[in-house]
Image: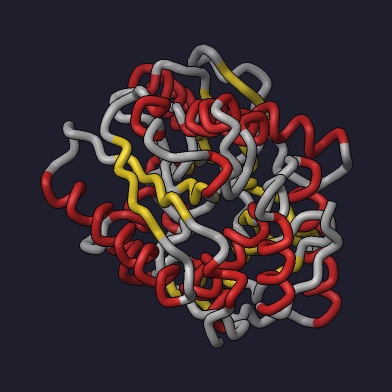
Length: 353
């Protein structure tokens, strides 16, 4: 896709977090991926400034930049040294009046509270696995197995290992104790949907579009405990799950299944107030798509499912990033006309506010 003059009118501050407590290879990987995104945006015509966030005082690090002149590409997962602070990053950007890509602070805070998300989905009759929250290891009243046990207030599959899937009351109680001790928070227990798993990436606002659906193929794993996306499957290239979970893109689905998945995913996207882009994780059992998770700011690395889905739909990595910048720019009081022009140039026509 060609560069556009509209992109040149949308300067980008690409903010990303780098923590001194990380191992050198972890810091190097984050810098490398950020530079890759920045270069891809520059190739599309955006002036890009990389801003590493190296301390919790985000305001001081953004002080040199005028909010009137930039769109912030929010690549910042947390503030260095501050756990579970993804929503706080957005809150600080809002307090500074910067326009930024992705979900607002309210949506990010909600997404981290898994029980609240599930309750909200249930209120709107969106299928989600049967669940309960436990603050101790007694597991009173739970009789549904296999089950999966997760920390109630984490994301990025933190706490998800093969041991998270339990087959009996004794195993459940042991895993409850483990989660509560290691993560110092209640445990969320769910019916483990032993079915096909899908990642539905969406972009847009009033009329979000669904990108080609990805299926996570677990056929290499005969044991039900292993048929899931663990933390290692996402972050450890040496792990068996990373190597042997096959991504099918586009997912082999019937037309009626595609329609039902789209309806479920868009409803979850809207109910959780995702903005610009998001990813819905679902599993299919007995003709029902169950929402496992709603990710308002999913991984946008070039090797992540959203980038792959966009590429399959004809959008380069740079075009994907440029579209997200353009969607955010439509909220900017001075740059919205550039954003609208760029979205149209990229072939999208959502109903802007």
